[in-house]
Image (cartoon, rainbow, N blue to C red; front, side, top):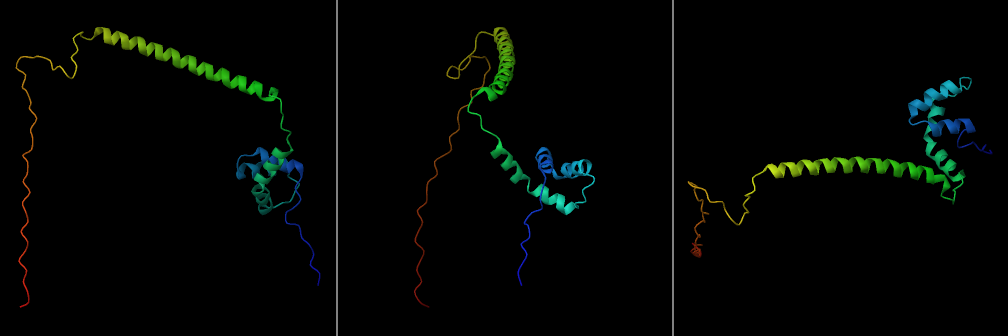
Amino acid sequence: MARIQKRKYEKIDESEIDLVVQCNDSHEFYERYRELFPTRKKGIDSISKIWKRRSEFVKKQQDLLPVSDSPLGTSQELELLITAQNKVLAELSSVMKEHLKISKEILARLPKSIHTMDEPPNRHGEIKITETKEPIKKTAHEKPSDIMIGS
């Protein structure tokens, strides 16, 4: 008996493929599919099979799009990104200048005699803390244990 060759996938229209690519998740796709194609009698299984092939459709669409060799297509995007980056850097610069100004004011109000760690300050009534050294522990020589031979 000859076997009839069955399709692996159902035939999917370009409009369905465009809808799959536009949607972000399966729930959104299902709802929009029902809104756009109310006359089609596909069940949830058929619709979910279309969603499962989403990556395949996205890849095909990326392959079909011509890759422009000229940078004119991306220059506007690049210009917008650089403008946004410059705004952020300008804001950061102004905040850092303000921070520096405040730090200088704080340092100006602090007393001028700041001692370094090497030179301890001379204060009356100061208790000197000396470092306590632990006594050296003597290691006791272990005596060999008595060997008992036979009983």
